[in-house]
Length: 100
Image (cartoon, rainbow, N blue to C red; front, side, top):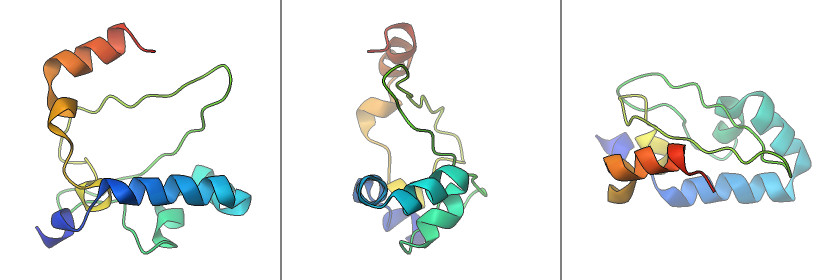
């Protein structure tokens, strides 16, 4: 439980900002995200299941979106609890039908 409570969406922001500022870190993140986030003192897994974190890059033709089923592999230790809206069936269904 302690690992779950120290997670925060700020961790995700730290990872993204570091990748924007440091092209070598970005390449390591795209190659082996679990190892790259450890450089920031973060752990991608959660207490319930080992998690392989995969990072993909958006470009002018592709915008990637994750639609998670919120199973036991959700990295709460990295991102903290998911927001209530993210758990709603209507959001998850709409984002697949009508991606922006």
